Length: 144
Image (tube, rainbow, N blue to C red; front, side, top):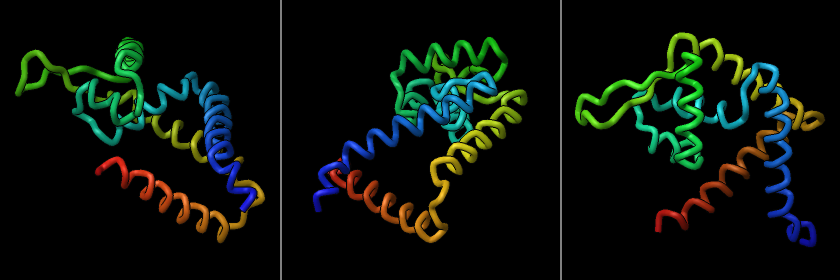
């Protein structure tokens, strides 16, 4: 049970290290971790607002605005008028972003393979099952 005292530290430090490794690989495709998070969140939620995208990517709304501005200038993302609200804009990926997303997913795969090196398939599956349950347990208190 002594090892459990380090649970929070290990989880947080692992997350930081994983993010660092991901960012190193993402730099090879000229993206930051934050840009990748925005692209992935938008891939799954095209037509969303900037505010909602910030929630989905778990990022500061002003940071998302700056990232979207740069991505729009690079023609990766476009803002379209919301037909239901003329003041609002909806976000969409461009055709140019689609191949880049494939590279982002490849970076994720490479990073995942690095951190799971030496871990058996059975242990990986057990780890993911336990992590999913922990995630559910932690989220249960959020909905009450």
